[in-house]
Length: 262
Image (cartoon, rainbow, N blue to C red; front, side, top):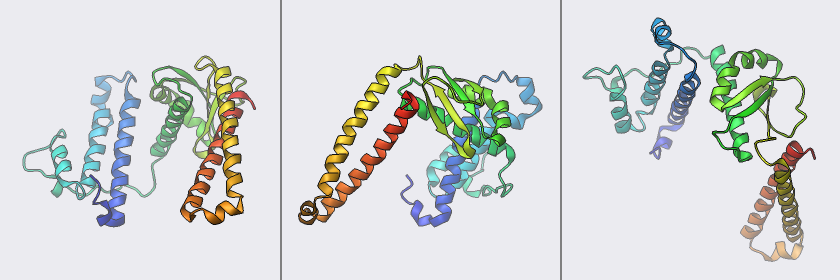
């Protein structure tokens, strides 16, 4: 669908990034608002704060940004948005204008929460924890982020399906770690979620096997006769594969250290 983006140059690529960001932001905003217990009366008092209105505004802006690249699809979708009147067309709609070159404090705070949610989801995926299973999440915030996570802990908990707590020290049990912007650490204890002992044994076996493969491939690349006689592309591929293996080994070693303590 975006095959023609290149013909629009930097402006086209920037528009797509802005549109994608608008859709991602509004989607997470809707999820974050779910289950807050806000009443219809509260939203009536401040209609601009309604989650559905936020979503419509963001999606409307995204469609305007994408229209020069995907005209027919965006026009069709734009016509289905609430509030459209007869005779209106996205092709004639004003181009979205950024209200300020400086991101608002609220947007920056929400981006921090979004990063934390994504970190928890990645930890789930890396450790085969089912998405529907509730987890405990410990946050060791950077100094300037402490207020944000104390205020938005409930939002993070809803989005990550987690019980969130703010901590100062390191947990004593096996846990997965992630560090997000500013140095805030996200910690998910894994005891009770997975068989830690079995997972540690599997990771150590995988690391040992990978080490053997690295030694063998490195030995081949250090053999002058092989490098001289093999086609250049084959040697280059071998070097690329070795680099990927080394990176994977480092990731495995770090995972063993975090989960198994060494």
